[in-house]
Image (cartoon, rainbow, N blue to C red; front, top):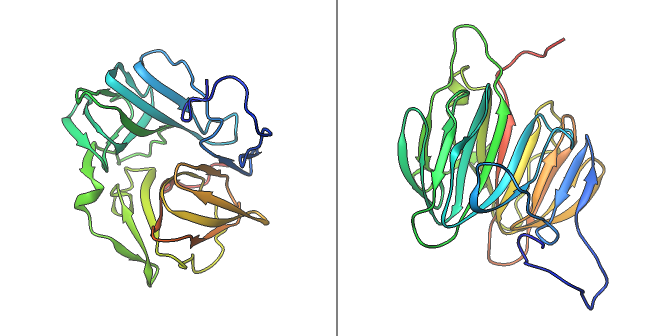
Length: 263
């Protein structure tokens, strides 16, 4: 059964999709057609695996819906794996070896390698989460630490001098080499765009939280909207415009950083 739209059986219309798979370049996954994956440790949850090394990514992204009582008591992470959990909507309790917290919409936990994240939905209603896992790159003299916060408590910052585009940095990577990645939320008002087409080493995994847009990836423009997921590999040219009516385009995305190129 399709995960998000609960599609089973035959359709009257032709089978169509906006999803595009270009491994080791870029990928777009639209909600229609996303399927469930069975993963040990997740109880009473619908889980789909989004980005993986099989796609070309150095990380793994997941979309998780925890039903009432849904949980992962085994822990999300693994040996040498850092983790990040963001609540799209609903309410969940989370904990690692350092902290416990109740997260509501916009809440998140980053957990360093070796400190797996456990969660439980005790609210009685569904909770949706975006989950990230990546092997941590250690460097001498520095270490990451647990971060728990809520994006609704953070101020928007103008993005590269533009007053119609704003960003929130979710982790202190800009001032702490202990972090080898960061999470951001980028928001474009209608008609806003990047200031240039970016081309860089860093990979992105991106989940669209609101709005609609036209995204430039490699040499193509593709439509995107709330609920879509994109993976952009290293050196994939990228930029977007916000389009539509009445709702800003916003997405949460990961970015590796703070490390020398390995030769």
